[in-house]
Image (cartoon, rainbow, N blue to C red; front, side):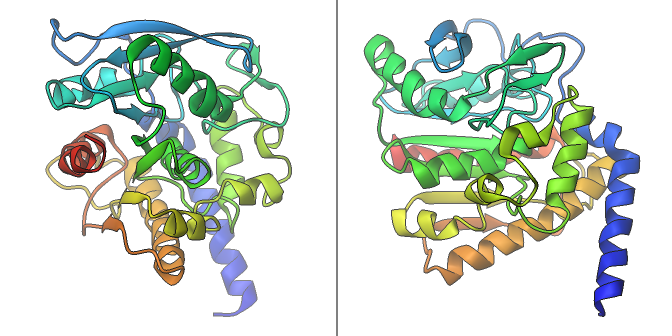
Length: 317
């Protein structure tokens, strides 16, 4: 394929995604109300955790269950009143009486759960997004002091936007996270059309500017937060990984609309790039689940959390 043909193909793909973007972003959004999916009676607590780095208290939903925890990170259109993991799945119920506690940070729309270079202006607010500092310093210190959660040997799982964040947090903080799971994550963020697609997505989800997050597309901070470029760190750390993506072909779980199938189809390629980089770096401690079906939708992510649960418990429980 010539360079001109490759360029035209990339532009056509970008145009298709841009045309379907409102639907794509809605897939990682929440329902109209913040009613929890999990049944009443579970020992779920709402914690207000001080964050000097972000200049505010952060709501964290917490279910005690053991001295180690799985951190569940939300999608692109994360709300400020509840986590999508609780609105769209029974994640708390899945881990009840499992020996593993559950930590659900709330908020972080379009944040990629990273430390931003500049203030995050969007969703009618101006915030100081310093999520990596919060998740790897302030929150574990609070949980250790107040809830008896070990600051080391935990798990982190993300979906869509936060799939890459889960891997990056584990790459740079291996003591804290012995396990990292990515579900339909964007795992080659600094390369090809991904900076453009991320920019489109963030503008649609709250009006945020990707340049305020990591600077010019493909620059040093994009590379620092690109799991494919940091796969060697994960391989060297020996972190236990679980990486899932569908191929855009829906099954009985649904997600047959064009936005869901298009985005998942694009995501598959970035996951394969990560797999190649990880195995090329000598990584041997990962499960890669790339089935011949699967769309960009919560039903698949809930199912995948069920599938990785025994692995999480074996690793950190």
